[in-house]
Length: 258
Image (cartoon, rainbow, N blue to C red; front, side, top):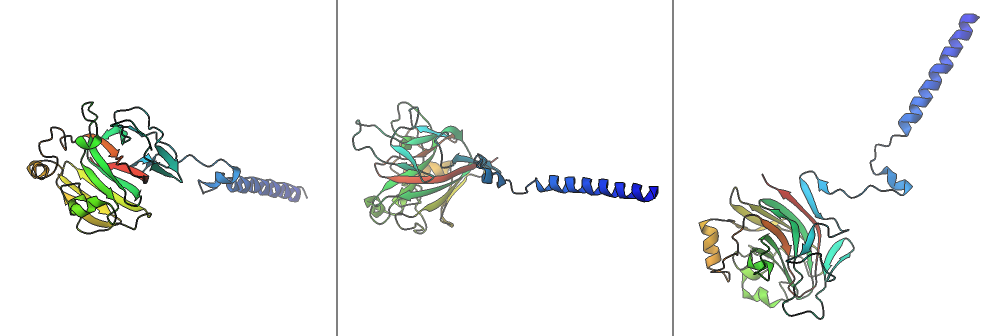
């Protein structure tokens, strides 16, 4: 009888330990977003693998106005996008171009853009903030953002159309989506391989060198001929252009190339 009682006690203890273990395991949720149910979602990630997020739809922490502090009131955050509304009144020469606070050299930049009807804007790289240069485009090469249908610049040849390396290399085709829809643009600038390219909505539409004799020759045949600063800086800031039209950007991230 004593042996039977002892066996029953051992069985009860074992079952109790198993129940505690099972309950403990049930408390561990394999879904890292499970805490949304209790009202405390995790903060948005600032780094996705090798990607550095420059705009996550919630703040302008990585950005500032060119040659100014802060962003200004002309740029708003709406539905996860940064939207530029040109001021109805502004001082002569006043601009609201944005640049990153950080410099970059070789990189892959992924960015979504949406242009307004008849609108014009651009994406720069290699921007150097020099007090004597009133505009970011005086130093930074530009990938054109444009309404190809209704903006007059598109009539000046492919080198002025959306996706072009502005005034130097035109797109191989028009890969833009209709005005009012989002376009995904991936820009690669690799100074080590001396290669750059533009992929718009999944289609590679332009490729070009990013320094050297061929680069300088392209500049000499453009409106930037004779410029002391244009395209001279391998390291500089990413910029977004105020061209006086409403434009939106979102999902901005960058991957540096070693």
